[in-house]
Length: 133
Image (cartoon, rainbow, N blue to C red; front, top):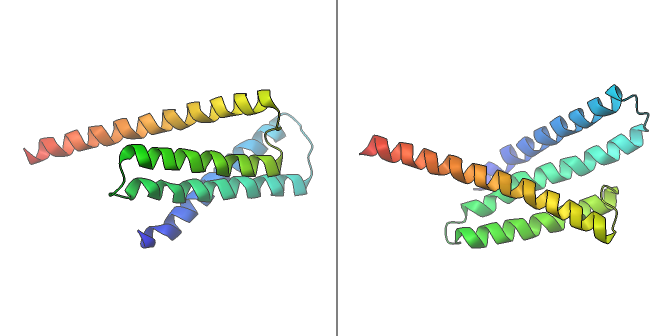
């Protein structure tokens, strides 16, 4: 597991770079002017989240934990990290409505990814079992 940490960190940074590039492209296409320091700060937040999510997937490799415990731990910590970064960066205003909407969006995206990966792994397991039999 410890040998996977650096490749995962770089994977998270790469995803953050892609997300930042997409965001900057949207700004350029819409002729939105912004400061370099603002872009830098938002890219930093994106990079921190990218590194977090790439490392947090290690929770799913703890074989002694049930899938439920892995998921609840990952989800709870992910929400805490996301809102800490989002609050510091000003991505989500701390109003009741904004927190509710952003939490619903976060959970929707989270569970789409979770179910997609779960489905993929089940199919892979079934295919591997077919080759063994």
